[in-house]
Length: 538
Ligand SMILES: NC(=O)c1ccc[n+]([C@@H]2O[C@H](COP(=O)([O-])OP(=O)(O)OC[C@H]3O[C@@H](n4cnc5c(N)ncnc54)[C@H](O)[C@@H]3O)[C@@H](O)[C@H]2O)c1
Image (tube, rainbow, N blue to C red; front, side, top):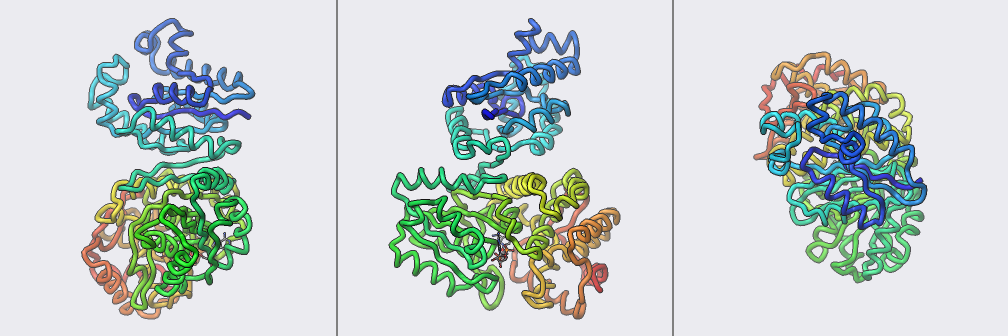
């Protein structure tokens, strides 16, 4: 079927101008829903609003969208700009979601107001009401968007070109694809995802290969076995010119000597600054190869192809790279944004169950941090998630990536708000240290760490205890342990103190006031800690 691009976003975000330009670039028809309604009703939008009211207008939108979907051209695609509130109607939303790639032009409230004021639009009469409306619609846009493009301060030309590029790479899988452009200092990151996203490598490799760039793939034995050949053939000549370095799997590989092996390998094979390091694997490979890319010749291009759930929802996004020292985890590293992240949930077909479950610990963390809506969705979909249902998983990874990207955009260098991502981690790290690394996956430790963190939140922030029992049930349904043999409370508390010292100057403990409302920098009294640990003692 021919692709349908539906542009969504608040009024003033540029849907019509960007859509029109995109249509020109692609040689496709462009339709503007507002304009079509004005034409068919013979009234302006303010006239329809004042004489018939908003619900009638939404009804016209619904009918018009149905007509458009019924009469889509067979061969060429269509670019459709929606109204700011079109997707508030559940029926219209479902119809578009099933058929279109929904591209969200994300704009700051102030910039939107500057563009929309004085336009005569019925919902842009006063600044306060306008901004309130924007804030109230944000969760809906974030929820439905397949592609997120930061639009503030960007030109129509840039935005249209980016969408055209995403479309070109996704081609036949457009309706199932999703992605995000991450606003980051210096190195903007393109994240593309969805079932089959791995195939996008081919078009990126073709383009890079034409410019003489070569791919240096760094992976581990397990991932090489499952995906090495496929990725190599998608990279084509770009990989033949570069090569593949296959390392031992596991956390132990994230060390100085493996990093040195990466540097030596790149240097011996004559890698240049315009070449690309491709990190193919879980978080260990992503962190290690990412640091190699950040440092080799002071930084060469990096593509991340995360293959574990933890790497897809967490470590591949946000630009943190690191290795461990004998004295502690992640002590040496750099912030280095990948140019491209390809997140294909299908690559998790070969992921061992214990690793998959571990990743779900981080996913539950996102549910708690982001919203009641996401937490409830995890509960509703728990069976399908545990069974790795392809479509459910793709949507889930998309939402987690979007949340992480939002947090990173607000605090790329981890000086404040990014600390919320450590929910459950203070205790997780202490458990990893006291129970011994390797005794459980990191994600399993996070899952365990969440429960005492919620208990602390009940005591210090008034979080209702119902959240903790819901989370416990959810973790159990994902096959995660919710109790553990705690050697001795004092040792664990001591380990959390040491963890804090390691991150001296950073933000301490993370708790929740409510689901979707995290607080960082809590100073937790030892007795509260001790009590909280009891909730996971076997
Ligand atoms: N940079 C960040 O922001 C960030 C965030 C969170 C965690 N991390 C780091 O991530 C690491 C943990 O990542 P992880 O859990 O992915 O561990 P990992 O990379 O060790 O992968 C886990 C295991 O699964 C195997 N594997 C991965 N994908 C596979 C696949 N598709 N098929 C078959 N086997 C596969 C690996 O070979 C390995 O044995 C830690 O070192 C942690 O510090 C980094």
